[in-house]
Structure formats: C-alpha cells, structure tokens
Image (cartoon, rainbow, N blue to C red; front, side, top):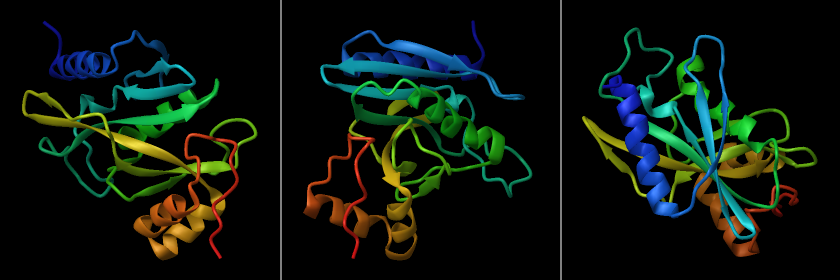
Length: 190
C-alpha cells in the first residue's frame, strides 16, 4: 500500500482521466527538495488541457506558518490552450511546485507573475487563478480542487492589481478575448 500522498495522487489522476475520457501524454520534473511534479496533457482536437499532478500530495500551507496545515486546502492546476505549446508543461510544473517550495496558497482571483513568457513568443507572463470546469476530487480527508489558470499578459497583470480579477474578466468577456491563445495581445484596458 502506498503513502497517503500517493493514494491521493492516484485518486486525482483516475478522476481527471475519467472526466476527459482520453489517455494523456505525461512529463515529469523534479525540483530540489520536492517530490516529482507530473504534468498530464490531454489533447482535445485543436485544444489541449494541461493538468499538474503532485501538488496535492500535501495541503497548501502559507509561508508564514510554522507547521504544515494538515487541514489546509489541496489542489492541482490546469490550463487550457490552443496549439502546440511544447514548453508550457515546464511553467505549469513550476507553478505546481510553488506551494511546497515557497509556501504559496492558491485561491480564486489570485495572479501569479512568472516574469517570463509562458511559451516562446508569448506576451503572457503570468496567470489568473480561477475555478475550473473540472470537478473537485473527493479523497480521504477532504477534496482536491482543480484550479484553472488563465494566461495573462504583463499589462493585464499590472491592471488587475489595481482593478481586480472580476474587472479583468469583465474586460475579456466584453472584448471576446481568446484566452486559449498564448500569442494574443493584451486586452484594451484604457
């Protein structure tokens, strides 16, 4: 029998695979002092969905905590794109390792700036965290949320810090911004 963290990962992977109904491609990366983070890529015609697998081994605990929060939230990250973004899995793995490495606790409306393009040629240098269309996974001791990451340009990140995530989402909707296009321009924010 595996460790509790491995059992959680197995449950999450089974649920995600069942929700998509297709076999994923997978990649894995290891960061110093952190168990491996895998990224599953589900090809859905002209779109792809990348989902992290490994972040939910432990509950997310803030960097100011002195003890691991055993009842803290558990989550994995997903991002939906159009096209062949070969290096996107690396950025997703970095984001998924952040709770263990830096004490990040992801929540709806939060922005994260990586300071470099998500993929070569992209203006998107960060993400906006939100609720996913993928349902939560029930595991022993609670749920694992699958959080949706939306690529955000540097200009949008700066604007969002002032006006908030709901205002940015409203701008995107009003302008019919293609959020699956990592090579898109920023929304008009004037």
